[in-house]
Length: 435
Image (cartoon, rainbow, N blue to C red; front, side):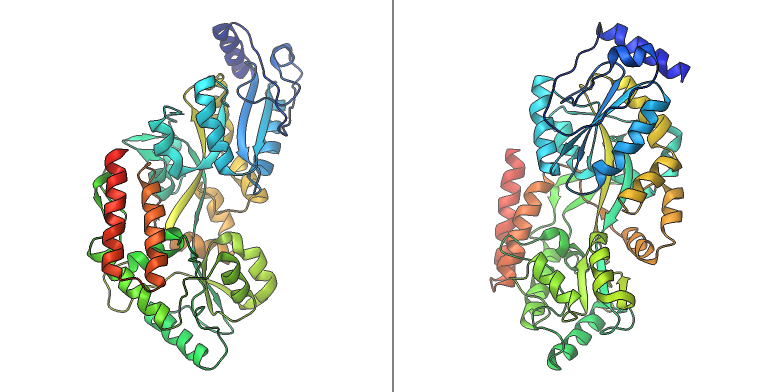
């Protein structure tokens, strides 16, 4: 603690004092008993970085993430004679917009929590500072470190790894399908018997905008890809996979699955969820966020399986992997205090266990994941995620998500797969060239 208070004093001297701005956002502040803490603390909510002894964190309050961070940060702050303020946002998009705007005005936090795939855009906008994982790198799942690495530098501390998989109703499919051929054959039999609804042989959301994220296991199972990635982790934006052979094959397969009653263009998230929970879909491609509701609906009949490959195929059905991450703005007012919190508190098993206890996503920290994996659902998602690929953390990926999703919907609605994928390819490449 003495070392930390020395850091606080140095930071105050370097900044020439402390200030805080008021905000109507919900936040919490914990004060220690030291003079340094009381002199630099903000007693209300702050928008951006507060005083030299006030650590300000922005977090998404639409799930349980902010709820998980807040008590852990407050406890650390009280133990170390500083304060912690957590500003809560109703969604990640609002938080990102505030970061981009605040980068111009100086209204930024000391740390914020968000998905790794925003890293490229935030770096391009000059918002993000590298975060050195140092000797702790080996304590994280390899895929988590890969996700937060761009151009050889790491840009955050990963805390959760999440992916989609194939939720399976054991009453309709007693074992995990060994191949996609097996899943499709079983679904066709159940549809013919009137047990399963046509178009929901595999419950997968598409909708009028499409959904490239949920389609990715099927898209990659036929050789589709987004961007080629080098051994150093960098993406080659000149080698974009939409419109190439694998993506067209995936489009042809998608249309066949629709014609066979396995998938349907109009299926939304709510439709897919309801059908699986009522037992009119044997399979549901979704993520761990669905486990609580589906455990209630199906009980012991709920099982989590990998999305398998097509029989005899050399292509792997890969989920996109998203990594929730603590990141540091380049203009953080209390960068030293933020780094201390990341190194001394966040990168510990106690902190990672605490995050999981409130926001139960599969931990990125290996020791915490090993504990959490005693839950068979967590283990199943984690095991399949190891076969996945991190969502490319480059700004060009946003173009792919939009146009590939629209192509998925059009093809599922009857459009020619080759022409549709070629059109999407031209649109994406045009946007990349102009970015």
